[in-house]
Structure formats: structure tokens, C-alpha cells
Length: 383
Image (cartoon, rainbow, N blue to C red; front, top):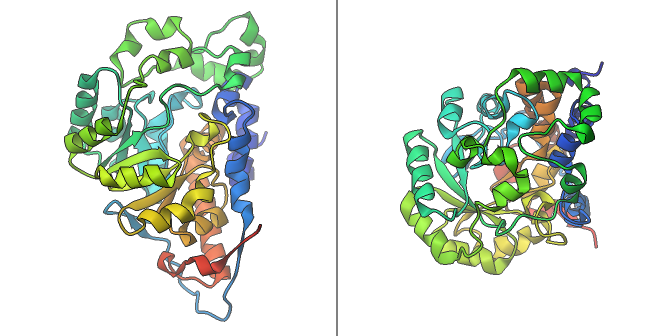
């Protein structure tokens, strides 16, 4: 049987995860909205740039370290917030947080995580952010902020591209429910994945650990998408974002920016960082890929706030291209979930090892010793 030792790049973990997860669980991880055009565009956007190597330069020592929101990191690759991580492996967020700490980078915990703010903090002393939405009940927001502060999360990350839930048709076709329903429609597929099934049956059920409603039985009756959608407030405005900046009074990033206009607004309300993202292609289909809008956003607000991109990163060269175009760092979600499903914490650690090795090799071949050496003149955009 294949193992994580047979994975030599990030997409190898995807292939292994696909074999180890029931179809409906894999599709929840892998799928996007509508026709999944944006999902594919996230990947394709990096292929639009060539790298222009400089030769005969001393690249004996490669330094991948940098600083993000005042936090020193050994690798400019952060882990994006993802919901219900224990669906893919019972160790879930704990395993991911530990692997991120071992790699010397930042893990962002989701509001709809399957491990709580406090439990994740106890699992790892590495740097962590907490991702938050504008919930209908503003007291929930205050509670999340207080708990994040008490558990020593370094930054708050407000996701703004989920006024309503995207149309994720793979989940609808598969009849995905939360927690996972073992019925006639799904039983055969699940029985073909005995390792996943055994873990599902012998470990605590997957819940929305940070939200009290997840413990009152409601989540057992409603579909995952309907349940989560009911928690979000579609009336949220920039004033609400400014209120949250004031409530937190610390490093505050806004995730889900897709235009120059909104990047400027984010800076105006006091965001110390913005994350260009289309929610992994899971919300508005035909939205632009983060890399495609990065240069114009850097031109508009670069130097006034830190700019990160999220979506489509699968190779060390992808990271390098984003940094060369002005990103402070990149974030990724699906790749570490593939690795988690493939091999638990060890899988995520191997993913980091492979990515770090790729970046060191690519930086040397490009003629760069450190992140600050990267610049737009090392790229050629293909029309």
C-alpha cells in the first residue's frame, strides 16, 4: 500500500488522500463552486509566469526566513483556516498545529474548526492566528476575541467572502451531511474505506467545537452547508470590520479581498494585513485568482499593509513567484489537508519538508540567497 514516503510533491498527497477518504469526504475537501472555473484558475495562474534565473552567484547558503505581522517564520508559507479538519483525520487541528510549529510557521485556526481554540492552543506553542466571521450574534464575536486573547493567538483574521455559502455541487450530489451520515446512499463507499470508517467509529464525533449550537443536536439534523450558512450575517459592512479591528487591538488581517478597491478600504479601516483570496474557488465562481490581482494590489497599497495570497499554491516555484510579485507570504489550505488525510501529522510534516526542499533548490537555481532578493524583474508574464 502507498504511504507518505511515496509522496514526492504536494499533488502526490492528493492522490493518496483520494484513495483513503470516502468520496463524499474527499469531494468536500477537493471541490469548488459551480463549474469550478475559479478553482482551476487558482492553479493555472502560476503557470502564466516564467522564472528568469541569474547565474554565477553565490548561493551556498539559502535563507527562507521572513517576518509576517511581526512574527518571525522559517518559511513564508502559512496554513489557512479550514473547517472540520477532523473529517480527514481524527487528530485534526492538533496535528496540523504541531506540524506548523515544527516547520517554524503560522497556523490559522478556523471558527468552524473541529478542535476548540483552547485545545488547539494546548496542542502546540507555535504561532497561531484565529479566523473569524461576523456572526449574527455580536456577543459571539466578543467571546471569540476574548478566548483568542486568553489563549495567546497572535492575530485575528476576518474572512469576508462568505456572505452566503457558495454553490458546491459535489457536496449536494453526494448528500453530504454533518456529522457524516451512514445511510444506504453512502454506506457502500464508506465500507470500501475501512481505515477511515474505523477511525470515525472509534473517535469522538466531529463537531463545530467553538460554537455552542454544535452541541445541542442541531448539527445532527441539518446539512453541513445549511447549518453553517445560518450562522453568517449577510448584512455585514465595512463598519463592522472597523468595529472588530477596534475590539481586537492587535494584528488584524482581512481575508477574501479580490479587488484593488476593497484592498484600499481594508487599509483605511486599519487592517494590518490583507489576504487576497477567493476562498479556494469555493464561493463566487469566475472570481479572479489571487496571483492575477496581486501586482495591482501591491501597486495600490504595498508599503501600507502586508499582502498575502491564498489559493493554488502547490510548488516551491509558486511561492517564489508570489513573493517576487510583492507578497509578504502565501497561505495554503487543501495541500495540508491532503497530507493530513494521507498520513496524519507525519504527512503534514513531510509536506513541509518537501516544500522547503523545493524552495531551497529553486532559490539556488534562480540565483537568490534570501527572500528579500526576489523581485518582479525575475519573472516574465506570458500573454
